[in-house]
Length: 284
Length: 284
Image (tube, rainbow over all chains, first blue to last red):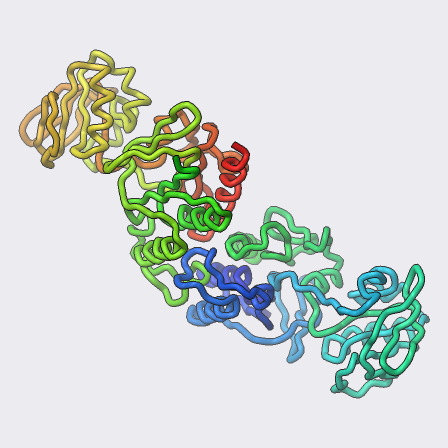
């Protein structure tokens, strides 16, 4: 079992990994994409020490290389769920499972969204981003789940326990798995309803629904954390002065905990979180 | 008059300069040496984004280049005094004088010291690092001032007003100025005293003294700040949550304010101080 798993290999995650490594703790870093820095069109020139301005993606790659050069284990994989088992954590990824005494969430703040009419209007009014959080409210009801990958399948397993009427909407994608559920492969046109959602309209038809669960791509940290009952305020994970959430051993750093959405702040968080995790892991 | 002068071009100073510049404030950065990073023998590899490990001096140079590339004015000069004049500051350097609405002290924490027997014992017991702070206690007494450069001359001017018996000890160096004071060019051997200092012993003789002022090289931020009455605790400048000292418009960031003596923390400080200075300067 690992002492620490760090989810996310941006500035916060890599900085934490480096500080832990130098404190003789070997973390496993699991990362997937380039986070907020990928969407940043400009060049990074306001962060100290990078030298000539470079793109956000280049900076992330440089950080990953820096960690690997120090002997830190970094894997590219998608985390689809995070669970607590007795006194430790299980991190479920597309490719496997990992166990650890503590976890640092440092994935940045990108959230799942679906840019179709009605999505924003009915979010929280029948549209949910978290099966574990809200599935219970739709037991024995007509449920739709939107997605086509491992994350969707993970959420589906949970929803199938709640209701025998769960339909998968792939939104135009192929489904790479065998399921017993109904599958609608049409592109979604819009979400329809009154004060709450009542229907999904696709290119091929109109489908009645009570609840819609979105499980596109991979879940964000807020989504992992919600599964575990972490306190979230205004879209930020709430942490104490030791960067620990209300779940012992679960830490968070970077954009995901709010404050200035700046590399300098994410790096500072990563350093401090590493020190706090070190204390936690050594004490245990 | 400048809106902001930043003293120190290490991680905190340069980061603050970059953030101010991007907020349309053109700071002047005055720096001199490589601070704590110069004395660091290892390579910097725990700071995010630098790429291949590099020496502390290389990192400082890279930071200065980064600032200059963004059009920030960076000068290499030694600050020897900091004064308040009505509602603004005067920064006195070896080469000139600069005025500004606000000042950020980001020089790191290197302090003046003199590695001779008795120095530590009599520091605070007759040996002082600040003429403005302590000169008054030695008025009309036998004063020694140790130093040979612009900083010493600046402090001398003040001490000459306190006493007509001020002797300059150059500690083996040449004195590049005409003065009316007595000058002892011998190397200092040790500081002698009872419960307080009574004599300086050099290779050439024993000199009776009541007070000794050390003004070697250039003063540290703590020394500038002391001249202005800034609150210092355990060798750190005390700042509020806006990185402001008890002197309005005088800000401090980096090692000098304590906390973790890490680049990541200095950079974080620099970013936050820049935002606070921006608010201060724009409001004024």
